Image 1 (cartoon, rainbow, N blue to C red):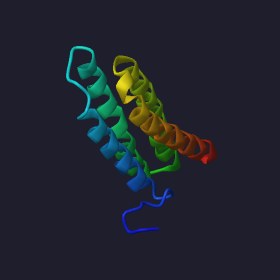
Image 2 (tube, rainbow, N blue to C red):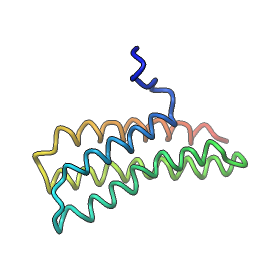
Image 3 (cartoon, rainbow, N blue to C red):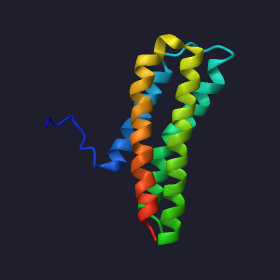
Image 4 (tube, helix red, strand yellow):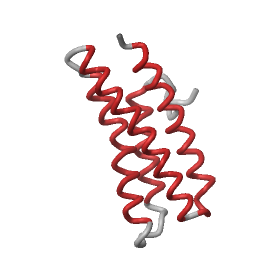
Length: 119
């Protein structure tokens, strides 16, 4: 592994990289009447994944942790939804969006598992 690769188990870094990748992706999307609200929504939910994970990491109780992880998994699902809508509006972005969608899916699965394990 090179110094630039992020271990997949470092969730704080992985969620930050996901948000960064979404921002770079959104800069490529034409700003029009359809895309603009989709871009705003996608940036909000995808960058919220990392922010809410950091909050969960600093949770004050198990219940607080579970609540915040629940928000993280919802934001991952929402990211998948808006990526799908952007592809409908911009089919030429499908390949790049699919990679981001897959990362959102993997993060959602990870946070679903964490959520289920918290009792």
